[in-house]
Structure formats: C-alpha cells, structure tokens
Image (cartoon, rainbow, N blue to C red):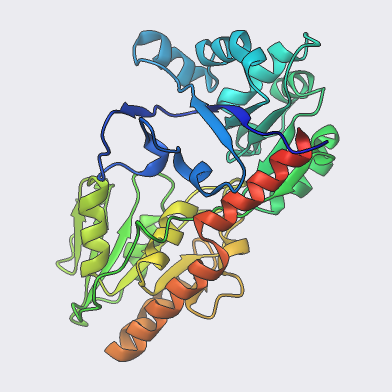
Amino acid sequence: MAELSVVKILFIPNWNVAQLTEDQPQLQAPDKKVAGEPYWFFRHFRGKVEVDVLDRGPSGAFQWLEKKAKFYVRQPFHAFFRRKSYDLILSHGAQSGLVYELLSSFSHHCPPHAMIDVGCLNGGRVNRTETPLIRYALRKGPHIITHNTRQLDFYRQHYPVLARNAQFIPFGVDCDYFTPQPYVASHKMLAFGYAKRDFETLCRAFPTGRGWQLNIVGDTTLSKQCACQDIVFHTAEPLHRLMSLINSCEVVVLPLPELPYSYGQMSLLQSMAMARPVICSLTTSTIDYVSDAPCVQCVAPGDVSAMHNALNQMMQLSNDERAALGQASRQWVEQRFNESVMAQQIEQFIYQII
C-alpha cells in the first residue's frame, strides 16, 4: 500500500496523560501531551502523523474497580466509537487493548489495531479460566509489539494466532532528556523503584563498613528490618529529584526478580543514559539490553552471593574506571536503545500494517 500523506493514530495508553498548553519539563514525555507539539516518540517519525491520545480518564470508584479487574472498560468503548476517524488504533498494554480488540472483533469497519504488550497479556499467566477468554478476545490476531524477545516464545506456545503478527522492538530512552552531570566521586550507590524490586537480596548482599552508602528510593518496607547505617531508605521521589539522585551517585543497582514480562527497562536505560555504571539482574525483561553489554555487571536474580561479588568489584574500581564504565553505558544506549531508534522501528511496523 502506498504511504499515506498523513497517518491518523488514536493512542490508548493504560495510564493518564496530562493535556498541557505549555510544557512542564518535570513530567516525562509519555505522561504529557503539549498543545501544538508531537507526543512522545511520535516526534521522531519521518512521515506525517497526527496522534490523538485517549487515556484512562478521570480517577474514581469505577477506575478503582477497573484496576482491580486488571482491564479497562470506559476507555476501550470510547476508542471503539471513535475508531472510524483513524488509520490505526495503537494501544499500550493489554489492560487497554484487550477490550478494544474484543469490541472490534464484532465489526467489519475497524482500522488495524496494534498493541504494545509490556505485560505479556495477563502477566504471563496461563490458566483454564482466563486464557481461553483472552484467546477469544484476541482471536482475530491484532498486531503486537513486545519489548523483550522471550514473549515471542510465549505467544508461539500459548497464543499462536498472535505469534504471526508479533515483533520485538526494543524500548528506547530519550537521551536528550536524560543527560549526565559531571561524574563526582561520592561513594554512593542508588537503587530505586516502588514495585517489582528485590531490595531484600540487595540489602543482604551489600558490603558494609567499606565507606560506601546505599540509598534505596521508593520502598521503605525494609527500613525497620535493615538496621544498617550504610543503607538509607527514602520514600518515592518525583522524576526531577530522582534524576538529581542518579547524578549524585556513582553506581546504580537494579535488583529485579524474574518475571515473564517487560518492567524495569525504563529505569535501566535512563540510568545508563545518565552515564552511570549499572549492576543489574539478568531477567526476561533485561536480557535483550544487557546480556552483551561490557559496561553492565549482570547477576542472577535473587543470588545474594553474586550480587555481593558484583557490588564488591564495583567498589574496588578506581574513580576513573567507574566513570569510564558510565560513559560506556551512555554510548551503549545512544547507539542501540535510544528513543529515536525505537520510534523509527515502530513507524516502519505501522506502515507495514496500514
């Protein structure tokens, strides 16, 4: 099909997006749409595109019920009634995409639907009750983008109709926004995240009495159990403050449990883009990004001994060696996992569909 003069896309994410008349730099690009400016990664598209964003809608009791049910209803219905005005419906997350795909499966007048499936449909779970319902909703085979390669095997095994139209496109970070400050020797390590972090393994593994301080941001549940003056817990911080903490540390540590879907990738790539050496658990979510990265120390999930050794080795490096690893981290992301590369791959994927 010939390339359209202007591609009209309705983007339905499983989060809320602020509609702004003026930019607010403290908000990440996925969380805001500024009037008159292209939204998020679509700004890197080479072709002409018009993107409308239909988010989850106002919070309230109904949204609370939707979150409990793990899928959204109001948003997909609104998208379905607006569908004829667009060349493509692009959903982000099965919570938003499943109901829309179910609705559109009963109509012959629908534009193509592509879904960025970060959560592996139902968290990668397979059971007698939910899996047949998901298969029915997706029986027409929407086009799927995944940010990790192992999900492709999951589709082939459990959802073969999806495997035909699924493609791995690596997540990319905005290297112009996440820029480093000069590397300063502080003997501070940083771990952050409010969910899906194995801070217990990290605390057990951290070498104490070495003159280093570990700052854990976002989860304070272990603060009473971990009575160590070298480990400091902080509540969640806004993005601009978190970026300052990354710039003030020497090393970022991402202790992740093994889960069969994409998570933690944004934290990983943002830290690397800010030129910090990283110690990271090698999981389904991270293996495509760090398995062959010479600038990242990878450890097995939940392995206290491996984490201890990685922390100890990082402490033993000179300041210059750690700074060099940080610079290599940024170069790695700029070359392979920056937002513009992701956008161009998604654009090519879209044109193949429409």
